[in-house]
Length: 122
Image (cartoon, rainbow, N blue to C red; front, side, top):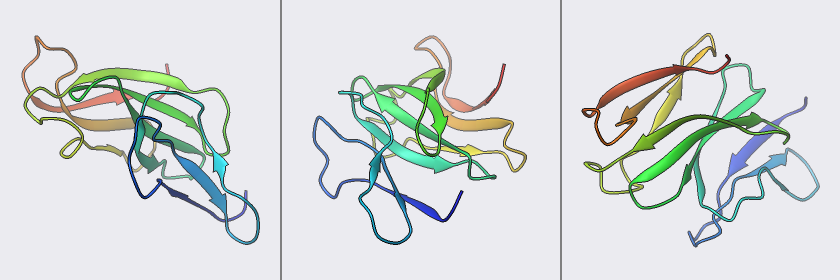
């Protein structure tokens, strides 16, 4: 697969996106083409997938995963962050075996805040 790294544009705007850049010459590859802000990328332990948050408002996001070099994305969960007040405190992390992603927040507005985990595959 070669060596990769991910980065975000320096300034956030309505069209925030995640890019993948192969080490060496060449232009970065835009991973998704969504008009919604895609933020907080996180590599899977094996480097084949990237998990990220797609924000639909300051307090609501979808947790997605996509192949590291692009492809079909899959929504894993809806997350509500009413107590976290937006982008700054939200986070997620892969388990070492790559089978689960843990995240802080509320899966729905009726759930209490906490740390939740969801399977990456069906």
